[in-house]
Length: 413
Image (cartoon, rainbow, N blue to C red):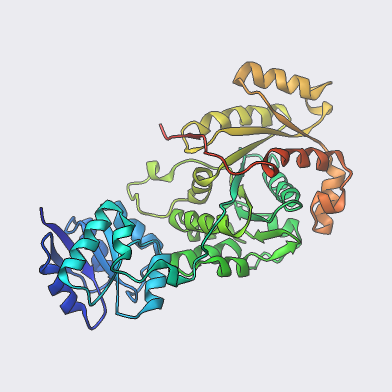
């Protein structure tokens, strides 16, 4: 069966490559596109099953490749012989098959067949070896921990920041602020909120230039062992954090640090269900992608009647979102909000009405939090003997002594 190809190629070798594709046994060129918008339109119209793009194609980025994939188009890159930089860029954009423009027809046939089967070993025989791209030989993946909670400011950022600070005492840690509604990590640590941060990392991921060195430059080390990727300074910039870009960012982050802690926004509503344009940017894409990519999930709720009710509903809402099995953290525990013996009362209520067990409780300590915020420090630096700091430090025990495990994940229903 012959498969149709749509191509958007800029090189002087474009005509020769198209002729070589036409001479293959299993492929025919259905459309030669002038630019990326023309290619996307052809994909949307169903003209092709395979797409060919050159490294210098104007506006080619990760979201564009994601859009092509959404139309069922499998994409391969094409570079001129010896174009190592073009090869690197296309691979960093996520393309597993990159052809040289001088390949013979039978080699193109084999490579495009391997694209369909995702057999990269076949591709490596006709492409520049990936070892030439200076990639590390052995990579130990980090454990990614998402910190999420319902609306009402239950203390997600406080838990995420201080959890990351505690983990950094035993291993390298990266704190990522992915809250697109109200990022606050930069302010909490006394950093400039105009710093490039996660928006710059997402742009680099879009353009295929985000590697370990680039991420290390964007995420400075604020204390020994702790790097921080600050959030977007204004909520209206949420469009810069698209799902493919955030997913790639977290993939690179796994290679930079032993632990990655993500401060997530509260909303997990899937925008695609509310819009006819399923390719448009999604308001909650950063949070949904973080939850899906995480190995572990802490759900933070406030220890008051309203906060606990929101916590119960939030955990129920998670059942419809791909995410790890949640670990419940009840924050700001105090007798004045729920009565005497607050931990016992909260445990009884959550156990009876929501079946929640193994709850972690964090005591109310506004004085220490205010002081740490004013100083731009974590609790480990500002109030190391406080009960709140000790309670958050206890959360790290299960992470610091164990290697990443197979994720237990809920699928979308």
